[in-house]
Amino acid sequence: MSGFAVIGGSQAYDLLSRGAIHGKRLGPRKTPFGPSQPIYIIQVDSQTTAQPVEFLFLSRHGERGYEVSAPFVNYRANVYALKDLGVGRIVAWSGPGAINPRYKVGQFVVVDDLIDETQNRQSTFFETGGLGFIRQSPVFCPALRGLLVEVLKGQGLDPSDKGVYVCTQGPRLETPAEIKKFASYGGKLVGMTLVPEVFLARELEMCYAALCYVSNYAEGVVKREFKAGELFEGLSSQEDKVAVARAVAQFPNIILEAARRLASQSASGGGPVDPTKCPCQTSMERYRREGRIGGDWRRWIKK
Ligand SMILES: [Zn+2]
Image (cartoon, rainbow, N blue to C red; front, side, top):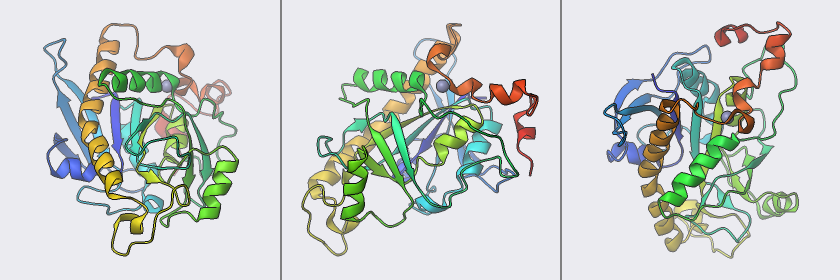
């Protein structure tokens, strides 16, 4: 089974329904936290060996449209289900707004830090007393981020490898004063989905990196009139929509190439990631040494 998975964000359902991403549908997976979103196995030619490369795909918001908005996604079920299927590395995508106007709409950003502004989301697997202090620096897997940046550059795109993602609760958009506040403490992009996903992946010792594309400018960053009946009520312009559609159309090629490169790293025997650049897969080592958790990760979580 694949060791790599992609969690698709907004418009992943469009790529599925149009067949731009296609594979065998495994369906939703039962977990102690309820059913996950349906999972697909994707196969792609490796281009270097006869064996195809396999990875898993899950659309965070649903299969047919934006069925489950960000605050209501069952993040624990999705991450648990992927781990249960043998996944060790996750690339997640998200389409945040830009707080900093230097980003261009449609630009790819491999974010490197995060501020959690969510409220009351179920943000840990260890809900019955739990384990203690799990370090969150680096927040995202540096090795996986490096691989994504290489893939994007290899496809002629011009990614940024820096960005502090502010994760809000939603589903409403932010007020102008909130965006000013986020900017004042270093936020560069604002979205609603990477929390608690990234923290849950760390609890299960999975590598996690986020591939963001800028969807629009956040409230107050540029002047946009209110337009009834439009996407984000006019916060997004017609040019923005074209740039976003162009970015989303790149996703199949990006994730297929990332899957190929990860598979070829594994096949070359060097391991998928440089351990000095990846703290993810040993993030729970202290608790293992203390004897508080054992070898079977499923038993870490008492339900
Ligand atoms: Zn890692």
